[in-house]
Image (cartoon, rainbow, N blue to C red):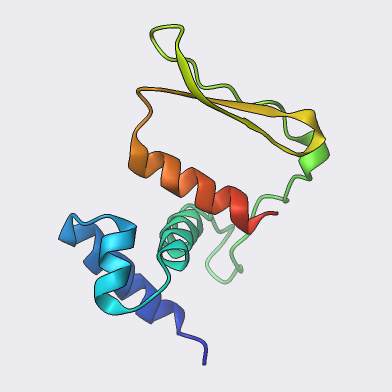
Length: 115
């Protein structure tokens, strides 16, 4: 059974307010933590969608293919890199040691949904 978007919005809101990690909150309510992170990202993305008129349907930016996505490098204030991920197309994602753990979880959840 698929869960409605409105229910996911409520779950995400409760999760954010709880202060728990996605894994902790998901364990408490019996859902997949990756689904929770995905829906947080999806709802935030949908909130940024703009409309072009009162009766217009929301327009989304065209999805870019992996071949057109440039290499992403996060540069820490010090030159120490903790994790390097090799992505498709030979792209390299360098994650500094001071990168926020929750942000990394969200980034990985998004990357996993696109593979």
